[in-house]
Image 1: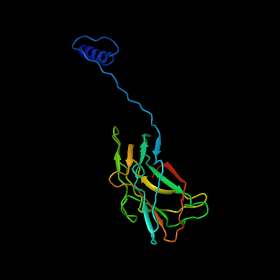
Image 2: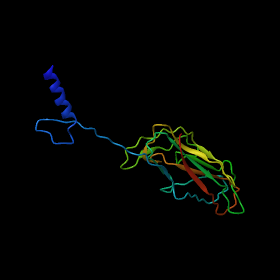
Image 3: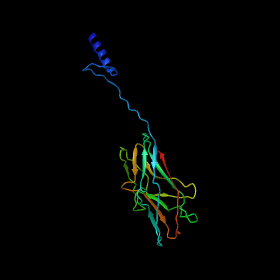
Image 4: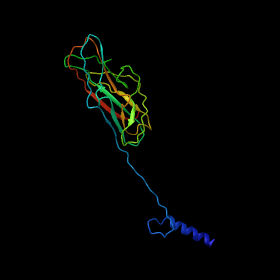
Length: 203
């Protein structure tokens, strides 16, 4: 019994001695702790959107194909796994005296070749980010109804809980298609609209 007690005492001493010198051939144990704090959820949208055409007497379906306009970046550094969603609202396209219809003019797809595509924009991890790709349940095309004031925010992309973590780009092989439908009887001019983007926590 005495020998067993002495062995236990020696073992206990070894297990707690890592803060002091130990003899050759001996060992000790310590605890390694990793603690990190969640960061922020952020969105980097395109700097602008733009379309142009020449009237032909036929209705026009226009898409913005400018590099940098067909994707956006989401950085979920929160570490929460809560998911997120991106919304866009837009004011009436107007020259100041002439306007385009609020309904049926603007829509978003995951394609720059078809305004009726049901394809979702795809996602890819950015360089240096081991991300978790998002799970998007948004139905495309997304119709955005413009308004002269207080336009309604419309969800253009969403991400389920426990996915979409890290920094990623939406719109890679399947680019984000911003489509405008311009009727043949539109009056020529430069029409502008204010787009408001927002990223929110939760799907």
